[in-house]
Length: 380
Image 1: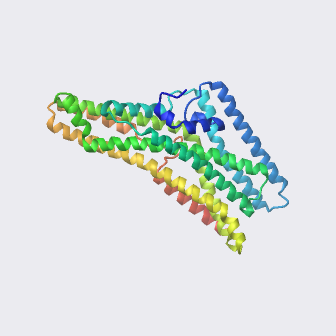
Image 2: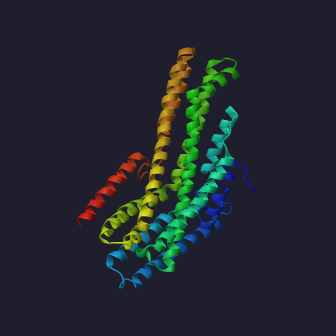
Image 3: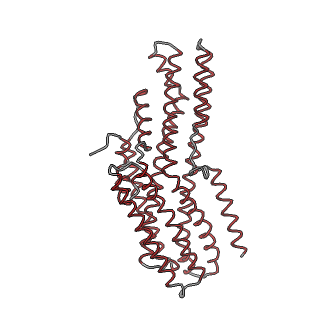
């Protein structure tokens, strides 16, 4: 049976895929919590067992490879496992908490407010097509990376290692693509708020509806933006709780890939001919994927924060303009002060469980850390 929430219906292809991988609570709480808890726990256990089998295969072949290669392979499998297992782990925690107020609930409230005040709606059909395309891209990207790793000479591995690499890659890419879709939807709604403030459309509508009562029109507009902003803040807080652990694990994985694989490409410059191309094929593909992901996430999160700052500036400008033609200046100032406190304490900032904020400053720190470790590695 289809959900009454249109945003949930738009994300249905991704939700069904998440059910299969045991990470459905990242999007929507499952009805049978305990049953799904057991399934998600089973996914975690099977992933850990597969990871242990990969370690065993590496140690069995340690006499055929160098110690450095064995350590690198072990570290890669471990970091990939940690990045992927964070998604079903958060699903288990979601089942235990039984949180019904998920991010879809708050986005639906935002859309309902837009529809009630302005009789406008978002294009959920386009969103559904976008979600389907991203699901297809996630599988295609996972298959391409797996094919490249199979072709690469240095990535010759057992069938268990190939299975582990592929399943972890699919889970990690799908989980993060879901976050990117939700992030994009929230940014669209914050953008629309700013455009409404800039065009002064809501004030003109409220002024006519309130029979030219300027104070009521002002309060209607302030209440609307306050409600939208609060729901945006609650949606972001829910996303922080949902994706907090996975952000820490994913960015740790990104740091390892950038540092380790860039160093690996450098030391392979001594290899001549086609062997060099085969050796660096998978590392280069992984580096490009990680860089594109980090740029997209940090730039989009930074854009949400910047739009929030613009929103604060425009509301204060609206308040200063309102005091010029509204006689009840005290009531206007009280409303403006309340909204100011809300904007101050409810900042639209993404972070990973308060470990770090996800913005361009974090990207700058990541580049600095990778550069530092690369210099240290190249010196030895």
